Length: 79
Image 1 (tube, rainbow, N blue to C red):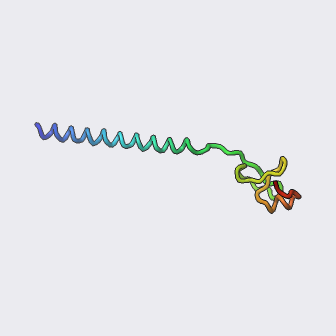
Image 2 (image 1 turned 90 degrees about the horizontal axis):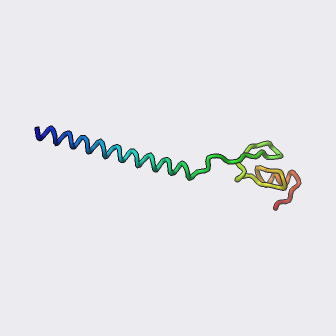
Image 3 (image 1 turned 45 degrees about the vertical axis):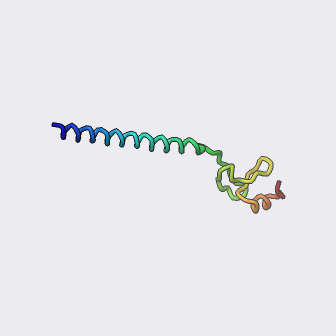
């Protein structure tokens, strides 16, 4: 009877340890997901029409460009 109780307690401890580990893993994943922005504004290049994140685009006045070459092509010197 003592051996059966020992194995049952060992199985319960292993199960509880596994559950604790899985909960910690899920907390790490959810914490990482909240660090990243979920939505970023997309803008369209005035020259070629490419859609890209606003953080990667170049702005000249009220217009957006995918690169310096397209900004120059549109007649904006920079800045």
